[in-house]
Image (tube, rainbow, N blue to C red; front, top):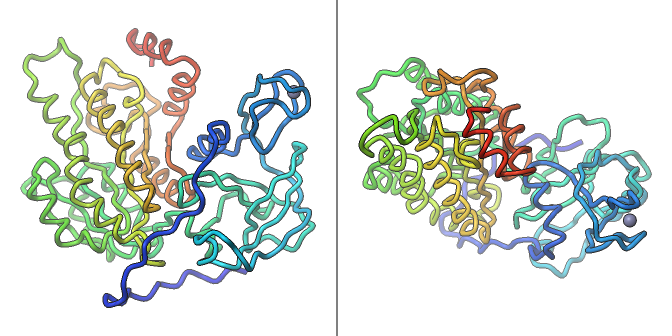
Length: 418
Ligand SMILES: [Zn+2]
């Protein structure tokens, strides 16, 4: 049985911080298909369109009929752990620092063999297991064999595999805006998930928002001044807590409902950009260097950055036209942030919720996501080792339409067909 989580010791400030090591991260273009699926929490393998063969490892052509018509298809991952071993010697620095590793050979019911990390909870081979693909610290897909009777991923129960996740348990977290309904829900969900300390950003302290004062009663919570439209405010907070934050959760956003013709002037659109795009940029400039520097601090390292974006970042929804544009800009910037944080092993997670049941989506037709559902998806994303999360049916539907035919989605949205 795995040991219960123990709070890590404080870091000795005199001991030099180690530089981060990462598992080998290079993959061929075709093998990145596995990573693309794992980034969304799915385990997919190549399937041949001509003969139906499933194959692993990924290749350019079908191993049976040499057809190049291969598509990635979700797999249930069920199979049998045939044999296992414990690695006690490794060439790679990353693995050498973490020996021993339990690895095994799994025969999938789909007909292929894979080599996978074996979770502590799995009994000795031979036995039934379920393979999941999770992102490792280099941001690449790694295959993990979990006990078949577990319905949910419990990666963090295994101390070795916990490092792949960004489990909020025992972590110090900054939530940039605690005043929105979504920010409040995020704080409560993170507190319930066992966060050690949550700094809650508060802009405009004179505004009385229902529910916000009650956050002060959470034992893990501490309210701090933070206004993402003010570079000085961001820098002051980064100077105070930047060296302690393990996870940044950016919930701050400005959202108004209009396209181009409905208003004169650009002031509102500028405010959307100020918070949603420049706010993220200010936050990243102030906090990302400290996160990178603390990426190898053992169990008390900095691990993740979460952006709450919107499904409107993928395709412009004209009724929320300027807001969509600001979220698309933030999405693009988040990819730079991801590229800059990945070498340190710090994961950037983007959430793309559909319309949320809040003030500015009032006129949207249901289904709408409750803020609590988005917050639950946020915590699950941290625990499950993924990068891109599309909470709720609307976001899942938009994503499927976007991947199938982005142009058709643009036309449907322009006709108000959500
Ligand atoms: Zn084939």
